[in-house]
Length: 211
Length: 211
DNA sequence: TAACGAAGTAACTGGTTAGTGCGTTAAATG
DNA sequence: CATTTAACGCACTAACCAGTTACTTCGTTA
Image (cartoon, rainbow over all chains, first blue to last red; front, side, top):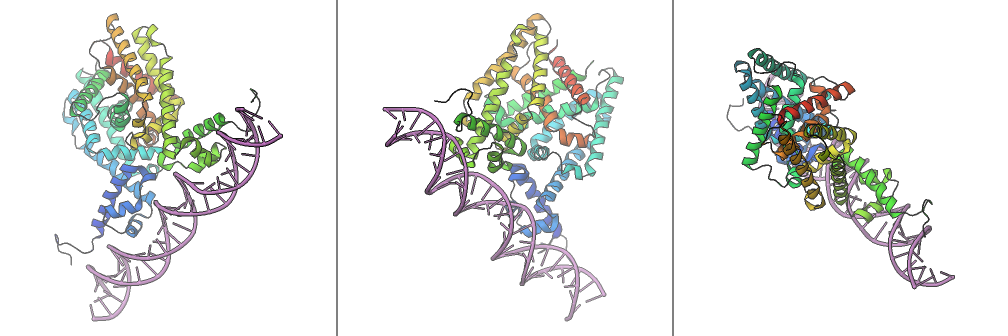
């Protein structure tokens, strides 16, 4: 019997987890097409055969990584507990959270980009993720309604469009930071530049919904 | 001597142009890593050898395609002639143009995404593109200043940040339309959805700069 | 404790792909 | 018209890469 804490010589769960973590890094760095299965195996300190044993194929591995990434961000969003905050504060907190999440989890953006290059064909096969997203839209819908009741927000703002915009203004800045830095001759990633962008985004969203 | 209009059996310029057009399609569809040189040659009805003759390597071909794409959008922006419009109209026209350009030139977005996956290493080698972009920022800066003089816009809005936001709210919606359509259970590309998004974006930008 | 299933490994395969060597043919030049 | 230059094509290669075969080792349980 395996004693907890003891270094097991064989540990299916641990190996699977190491593969998943390595795959996330490799897919994020090089995209689905550019990622190398051998590289993932090496990074995970696992044999390549194990990848096929646990995940079936490179594509299924990608699908699993992508699903896990979506579940992670949606779960974090739920934990924000925005229901108990005044509408204005709740919305600002969501904008801040989205920005910070992208900043701390740059793999998320690259994974989503890669999936969209492939026309969403992996996400289509997943059904867990949709229900998580419904929750997000209703969360924002609630904030908007509450804000209108409080008299600080105008009515008639589409929650889905607002959601897309909140994501867009952070996501675009970060995903296009390389070309942006070159074209606009700015350092996109200095802490001053990041702070400035976050403030601009909060301002954009609040002006959009305010009465 | 080649007679104008006569179908030449050999035409360096035409072959080069066909390769470039084919490469744009292939790179946009599959990214730099996923694009196949053989596929580009076939699509261009040129021999693969010609690609290496005119462009040297796959990477240099990509760089040329990317440069051409940037020059195209920046040139189109200049032709908008926004200087002779009232500030509000000028800004709305720019938001509309940006949206429509992305919509009609979907390759542009995918090329930029691909370049950012590769950390901008091709654009770094190009110097033509930077000067084009400087022009865009000053164009928006002028509109903002003019709007403030007219009394319709507030002062202190950063033209670069505004520029980024105008691009972001259109770009993000379109590049993530596959995952978006699945997660939010909406058809992102129906003409009603597209109209609605454009209106939302115009509204977002105007509220952002208005007094 | 035997035996069975699952974890793990190394070496291989078949297909693909960027890039080339070398020969051919059309057009420009003098 | 002869010669040179540049466009063009065929067929090849060396490297790469996803996926597999055939095998060993460990842990669990009848």
